[in-house]
Structures are given as structure tokens and as C-alpha cells.
Image (cartoon, rainbow, N blue to C red; front, side, top):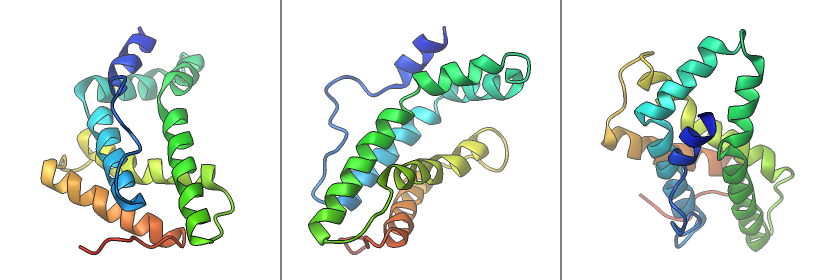
Length: 149
């Protein structure tokens, strides 16, 4: 059951994930895709289930974690970061670690708010959230955004 739910949350095959004129656009697009999946009622229900039942069924969290698209997302983001760092001749010591942090920056607060820990974010607020996270993240990585807003 968990695998079916997770598979339904993945973007359809053929949806270009790493697409954009620059890294800023790529990450903003990915953030939108990630939030679009993670904030669906099914994803929120699965997240609640994992939290509620993890002490009784410790393997459940592991199954979901392994089945989730997080590994794929981290790999894609890390690859994009590595390419950008190389093209700018910049140092980025651990792209996978940076990609995982990006994923958490994108997800954590919107997901918590959608679960009742604050007011849920609307579409405009989520778009702004994605832009702000990308800008902060890239600056923190030493890869400032290439576009101006």
C-alpha cells in the first residue's frame, strides 16, 4: 500500500525535472514539483501515519524513506549543483549533503503548516517560499542566484 501511495506522488514519467535556463530556475521548478507532491492530502496522510505509527512499526518509516523519491531528488539536485559549481570554478565540498539540506529547506515549514502547525500556505505564498529558499540556499552554497527579481 505504501509503495502505491508513494508511486502516485512521483511526477509522471517524461516530466522534465532538470529544466531551466539556469540553476535558479531549475531549483525553483524542482521546489514547486516537490511541494506539489508533498502537500497533497495523500502525502500528508502518509506523513501523519508514519509519525503516529513509527514507534509501533519502526520498519514503516524505513520502507517509506526507501520508496520515496527523496533519493532521486537528492541525486538530481546534487548533480545540478556539481555542474554549476564546476562551471563557476567554485568549491562545493559535499553536493549530496547540500541537496539534502535543500530538500528539507523546501519541505519542512510548508509541510508542518499544512499539517496544522500554523496557517497553510496558499499558491502565491508557496511560489514565493520556493524563490526565497532557492535564493538563500544558493547564496549559502556560494553559488549566488544568476537572475534578479
